[in-house]
Image (tube, rainbow, N blue to C red; front, side, top):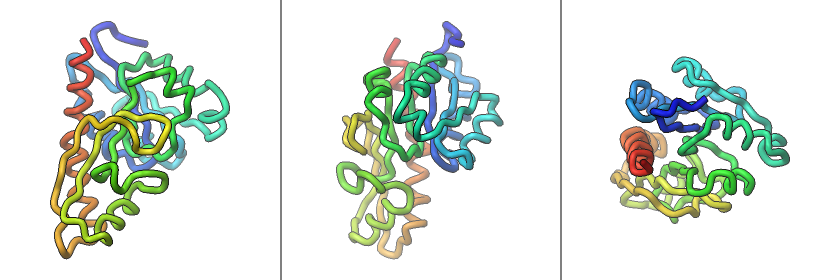
Length: 195
């Protein structure tokens, strides 16, 4: 599966997959890095179609396969990933996957952790909480993952203003611009530093 000249990324996504799209675009013709596969827990995830458009294998798995078996870990291993990127993936990663790929799984979160993280804090839930709290700024956190939601070591935080009249949707659009800009660059930097 692995071409000796390229580093492999495996993406996990649960929904639309716009960050997956940015990674697929960014690395489509990259000389040293490629997206090897996309995994999803949601048969309706548009991310699966995005992967297929780029001729990247798209694999679907169930909750039982993810949490009660080694099937997903074995499937991931077949793609020999140098990095696993959670791009809008909503389930907590189980211990067997963490152990199989130590320090090789990162996540992007649409807020400035440690605030506005944890179970259930995803998508518009995050932005609504930020707006409701009257925060002056929000942003993104790209971080390593561990056995708790949104608790891993930070890699990068980028900030944007929260405007007084912002709706959660308006803030979401501003934060998403940060995600799309920075996620491919962080992934690229992490992989090229591992030479």
